[in-house]
Figure 1 (spheres, rainbow, N blue to C red):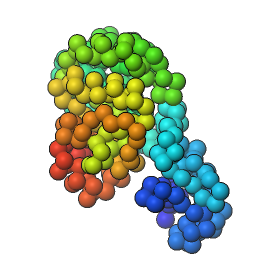
Figure 2 (cartoon, helix red, strand yellow; figure 1 turned 30 degrees about the horizontal axis):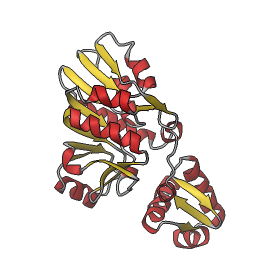
Figure 3 (cartoon, rainbow, N blue to C red; figure 1 turned 90 degrees about the vertical axis):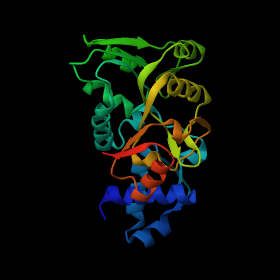
Figure 4 (cartoon, one colour; figure 1 turned 60 degrees about the vertical axis):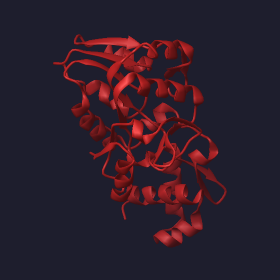
Length: 253
């Protein structure tokens, strides 16, 4: 088993059981405790586990939300494949929302130059990149900027969304499950995401496979409100079938 495969298995076990133990993992995965400790350090730096005495706990059990810069360094190849697959959902012309997030952010630099689009964003960094593109008209939603995600939230972002209607919303999420739908740790950010889904004719979720089965504090959409889920091939086929049965088309890029 390669290191990345082992680390993904450790993360899967931590999320299933709520905690993992160094000694038990070493025995079950047939490696040394030092190897497991190195794996836990990698996963902690990625922002998905927190080290505790003798083991680790998944961050969602602690109500912890990794910073955008941390999340941007994880699953990079998968996120790039997801973004490329999302290009198939772009309208020929018209308007789109691109939600703030590490996976949705990968869509911004690869938007085609031959389409006239209006792009609505709630991320100052994404707006800065988009504004240099001559073929795009960019609408930046105002409001309070959350330092952890660099997303604008609260009333100054909500009010414009209530008056907009776009062709497609490209959404990000912290967690997604069949039972609980799409969730995120912050209620203010959940309110913006909910308004984005409401404002769109179609909603497309961009999320790598580690986001599925996680549940966070605030819900913002049910699965049947999402038209397409674009994820990576790491998503279990049985889980993909369950997601699809709940409503959206599931694409494994």
